[in-house]
Amino acid sequence: MHQHFDVDCELSYQMAGPADFLFQLHALDGMDQRVLSESLEVEPAVRVHVYEDPAVGHRFARLSAGEGTLRLQYRARVERRPVPADLAAAEMAITELPDEVLHNLMPTRYCESDLLSHAAIKIFGELPRGALRVQAICDWLHDNIDYQLGSSTATTTACDVFRNRAGVCRDFAHLAVTFCRALNIPARLVVGYARFDEPPPDFHAVFEAYLGGRWMMFDPTRMSPVDDLVRIAMGRDAKDVAFATIFGPATMTGMRPDVALVAQGANAGPRGESSG
Image 1 (cartoon, rainbow, N blue to C red):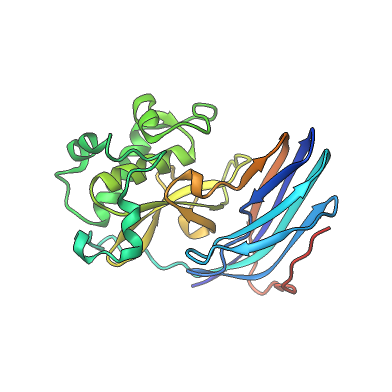
Image 2: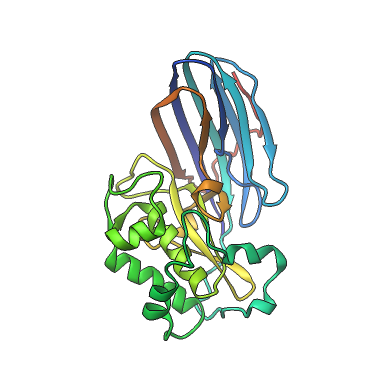
């Protein structure tokens, strides 16, 4: 079964001087989704260079802007063909893991799986191995960590979340990834556009665990169905998947990453890129 989603993302900035920007706003064109049409408009008109990371398929947009205001609007229609979750999927032995998956077992800046290894084994070590153990991690997070806006910052790590028992979606995902890696389950962060009953003005972070020979997506916040997430990027932690990296005196003044389910039969429109 497939569904179509319309993405309409607008970002705005105020610059006190020249600044360089690196954005990850483009929907991923691959895996379980396909970009049917898209456009990127930038005001004032500046040169935008879009390139793809050949290792994972993420697309980045680079631009430079002078003092004043900057506004970006990314629109896309995306087809999602999610693979049904397999809760019977098994964990894999280290010797069976593909080479390109191994780095998703390692501790990272925000996911200190080495420091939380004892806690992960104590809480989840005796549970049956496989997708149900990853689901148990999600259930534990939902029951023990409060979703609380303003409870964390850009430097908050999984250890901080475990200690403070509060966070937002990226904190839930970081702690889930950390627990999985501590149990020798490869895991990675995923960010994208999501639909919410009460939408926060932000992108959404979930995670994937490598089970049964494929990546399986989970959302421990339970805020949005994972099959409705329009994927932007995947990475070891938040430093790999930031929607904006800024070099210079720029301040965000607005953010609206909207996504909507499209009625069957609606026209996709032409595919193309534009700036200006």
